[in-house]
Amino acid sequence: MTTLRKWNGDSNDVILSFLKQYNITDKQISLLKYEALTPDSFIWIINTESGRYCLYAEDYVPSIEHVMMQMEDNRSQWNEHDTYELLPVVKRQDWHTSSPVASASTYEPPEQPEEFMKYAATSGFDFVFLAKVTNQPKTNLD
Image 1 (tube, rainbow, N blue to C red):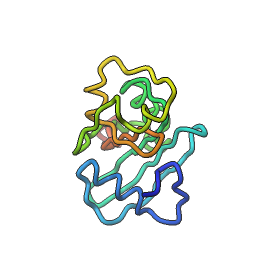
Image 2 (cartoon, helix red, strand yellow):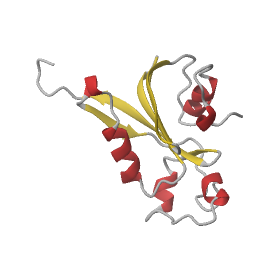
Image 3 (tube, rainbow, N blue to C red):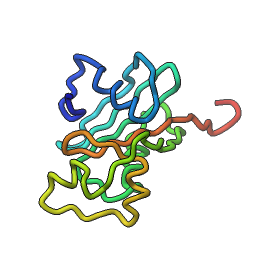
Image 4 (cartoon, one colour):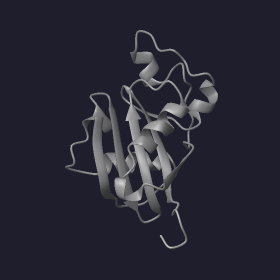
């Protein structure tokens, strides 16, 4: 299976396969935003039939708070009032045996590894998180 890190835009199949890990079984996506934030962290904002989502992948993730900060700091500028709710993975992995931890020489665990892994999938060297995006208008006129 191709990792998210190697996604090049030719096919969205790898993204669709990761959505299934979060019980999203939509068949098509529309890519709204993709950015390599660093050489080791990546973000996608996508639309599907069931809604809008933010997919985030990074090799070293110290906490859930870090994930949420990255998602919020890199939201689409035209949707500055979006909120993000992390979705749980269908099949939870063990933090100690996950591929990002096993492939690193050292990896400091988050404060609550069980809570962290409730939301984390893996893709090669990376942890992957998915959030449902909801728009929160600033006024009732927005």
